[in-house]
Image 1 (cartoon, rainbow over the protein chains, first blue to last red):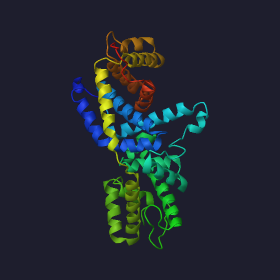
Image 2 (image 1 turned 90 degrees about the horizontal axis):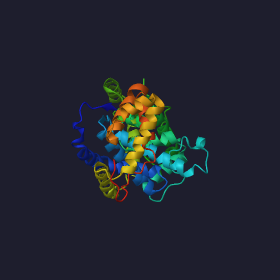
Image 3 (image 1 turned 45 degrees about the vertical axis):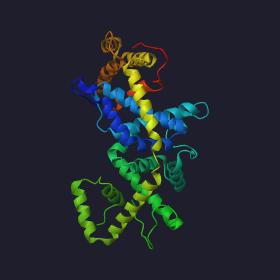
Image 4 (image 1 turned 30 degrees about the vertical axis):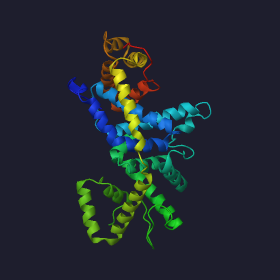
Length: 189
Length: 154
C-alpha cells in the first residue's frame, strides 16, 4: 500500500466502494462461503472487508490491487473467526493451514462441493486455495498476496493441483471435471 | 523441447509474460501434443470456473449494510469502535516506536481514520509493507463497526 499525496481522497471513496462492490462482491462471497463455517460468517467477512477498505482509503492509502486486497482481508477475517470459534477445542498449531470448512456447508453450495471434491482428490489446502482463487480470476500476483506466497510458488502449486486433478480424472473416466481424452498422456510438472 | 505443464498453465492464464508467451505460441503452432495439453488445461479451468460459479443474488443487502456503516462512521455514530481503534493504534505506536511516537501520531482532536493513516505510514516506513499489513489486520481484529443506538462521540 502506498500513500496518496493529498487529502482530496475523501471525494469519491463511496462511489469507488460501490463500484468495487458491484464488481467483486459476487466472487468474494462465493470464496467466503467456501471458506466460512456458516453463511453469516461469510457475509460478515464481506462487509468487514469493504468497511476496512473504506477506512484505509479514508486514511489516504492507495491500494494497488483492490481485488486481491479484499480477498486477502476476507480470508484472514474468516480464518480469525474460525480460530476464535474453535480455540477451546483445537490447538492453534493444527489450525495454521486451515483453508476451508471440515465439512461442506449447506449454503456454500457448489463452491463447497467443489472444494470437498478437490480435497478428496488429495489437493493440499494451499493447492485448493490457489485453484479457488484462480477460478475467481485473480492474477498470480494477487493470489500470492492473498496467501502470503510468491507468484512462482502459486504457479508451482497450480501445476501440482493440475497434475492431481488429471490423475483423478483419468481414474474416474470422465465423471469429473474435464473429461480426459482417450489415450491421454500425463506430464510431470 | 516441450514446455513444462506449469508453463502451459501460466500461458493459459496469460501469466507467462510477453517473451515467453511468444516462444510458447510458436512452439504450439508446430506441436500437436502440446496443443492437446493446453486444450485440456483450458477445459479443466473452464469446468472448474463453471462449477464454482454460484448465483450471487444475495450480495445487495450487504452493500446497503456497508454503506450504512460508512455513513454511521462519517457521522460519528459508532464512537466505541473509533475509541477502541485509537486505543489499539496508541498501543501499537507505543510498543513499536515508544510513547513519544504514540503522542505524535495522536494529535488533539484528530479523527480516528487520520490517526490510522499516520500510524500506517509509520509502520510501512519502519517495518515494511508486509508487517504493516499484518499489524493493520491486528488493529481491526474483532472491532465492532455496528452503530450503537444514541452514541455520538469520536
